[in-house]
Length: 424
Image (cartoon, rainbow, N blue to C red; front, side, top):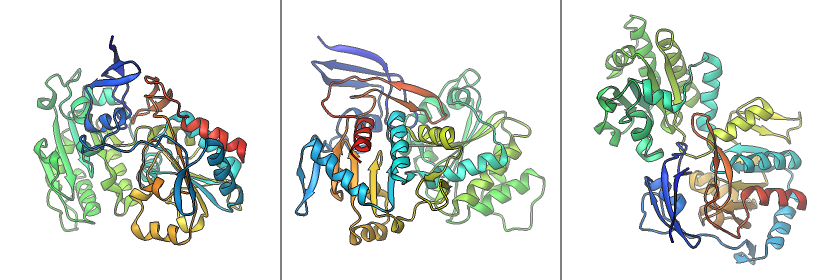
């Protein structure tokens, strides 16, 4: 008989949607309801935007012998990985935003033992936000409050349909809340982006700007809000955006990675200043739109353990040093990657530099990807929230318990990290 389970949490993105209905039989997954393409790729081995194309699951540990990845025993893989990090002078642990909180805690312990740097995969995205948050003392709200009360929503350099597809339906655009009972009819939506994205179809106001015009646009909005036209040349859409934001009873600015590609710290500083100024009259939230399912959990751990939402370096000559600047890969001679696909996001010149220097990479991944193809040692891992229990933090900081649904013989990320710690 099929086993139906309701209210399952999806780890497809930072929304951690908790309304999925799952049908299983004899330890196999048959059907998942209320799921987007990103979530589908977590429950079934398919590609995010091509559900008809399968991703290859890694089922055995792999070690590079004579230049080729070959199946090896778990003990052999541990021995090879331990040797790599025992002989490394400057090791790096990278990724972690797509792993559970227990695994993140184990990675932090391993970083301490190795005297390594721990680099969140989205540091360039989140570090400017936390800097702005501390500087301007911004208002914060959970997603349910935004759904219930926000009547003006601005997406800045963000396309939720590509980063967290159910976000518009559950929280930000079409969602019906306590004081927004008619959904999109009770709230107005605007977007600012370099390209005309799909969000333009749902926005009352869409402003397409040229590269490196973000700062003049933000400063122009600030001038209009202060009642001054300013002396700078106006960017098209400045006045309309200022009027749009000033009419909010409860406003929110969702920003994505697009806000941090050029002059990220300066843009987030201006966005923070704008949100703080608007928040003097009405509640106004500046909110990062994270795609990775437990990015917030990693920064919660770093804040709780180290007091700084930045990359910690335990091997610096002056002791523990935290940095908001992305890592310089040229300084490191061994890399452990988990919860991210490093070589997918790495610029080609940096990837080639790592390969030319023959920097050994050890990766933990449930699926084959570019990083596993370039690794010396590969560990297959169980999927958090499907094959192993875990804890994850929603993009607004709400901790959620992920249950185990399916049986597996594969170890979790945390188990491998703890075994590696013992082997070193």
